Image 1 (cartoon, one colour):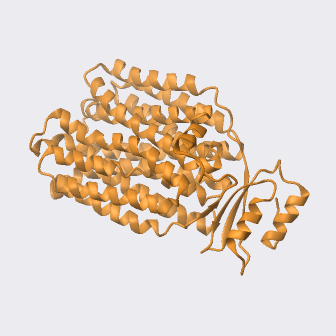
Image 2 (cartoon, rainbow, N blue to C red):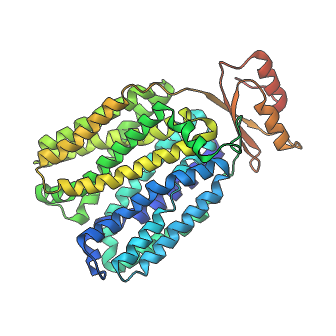
Image 3 (cartoon, helix red, strand yellow):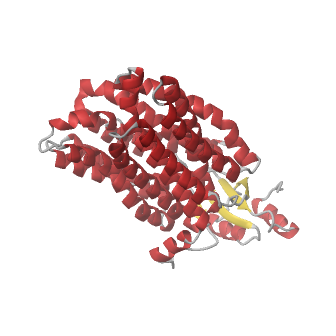
Length: 454
């Protein structure tokens, strides 16, 4: 990876981590401490936890549509401001309804898809799966850290203190946004004359993207349901307190990710993304079946979770990369917005379903989740390999008009996309080598004022 890509991963990864930790520290403790709020009932406590996911599901799409028409960074900043404001409202709440309003406000700052689109803008095609895999590990690790540290901190700072931390993390995330390079996207197709309906229709017509949305929905439905069902089972079967359970999740997550890394490399380098993707769903389905049959003993729980985390890390890594390859260049954020909405709606449904399954037998509870992943596999199975384009990094010539230069580059046959980072004097070219001719190669070499190995 080059220095621009490393800066982008550091900045975007830091923003994701701060948001996720701030959000999920509340989840394992609110069921207990939520009773302290006026008018609290079990239903309203659950609503206060889940309303964030619903807000994310609703607002991802409009935020992403805007990010395909306008620069991405101001929209991300708006989302972080809303996230911080929601934390402040919840921190000052005296009744459960104010907490719900604060969580809903925080959820309206739905910029996960825009962050992924920004990261895709500033990473080359060959580095994208690695970048997205890093984001997947960052997100998953942040969730686990939140589950581990939330219960440890609430005794000393209280539930309102956790909400204040959420707001503080949002402010830190705003600072990190300035670390991320600011790209200028130059596209062959302009969105200025497209309506929102046309933007959505363009993306929704692509069947393989819809299959990826189903995949992320099933992934986060089962993940959320697991964390509703599992704590009580870890207590009953392994004698672990809520404080101790985070220390079980972390090593399993890291082992699962280490095992997943070679398959992530194979998916990209060997162009086996479809095989790796479908194999991951098979592994997750089998892991949930193992939990259905073996969760009465500790080793059954540990092995089931280990295999689940392997599949989880693979899907988290490959889905954003796949979308960035398959989505129309001008509709990348819109496609990622639909995917993020599916993700958070899956989390919302998974939380509700997990609550219903809590009172059922282990065999039925885990069996239902295994059946959901199995059904997703059948629906997704016809998916085709994503298109594989090549990319190259060039130094922008000095003393030129960047806008005029960009348009000349985009006019060359075989150039699919151009991302310019003027401050760094660097540009990424996404190329379709099947469309490149000797003439177009010479044109590009002339425009960048150096020979290109393409």
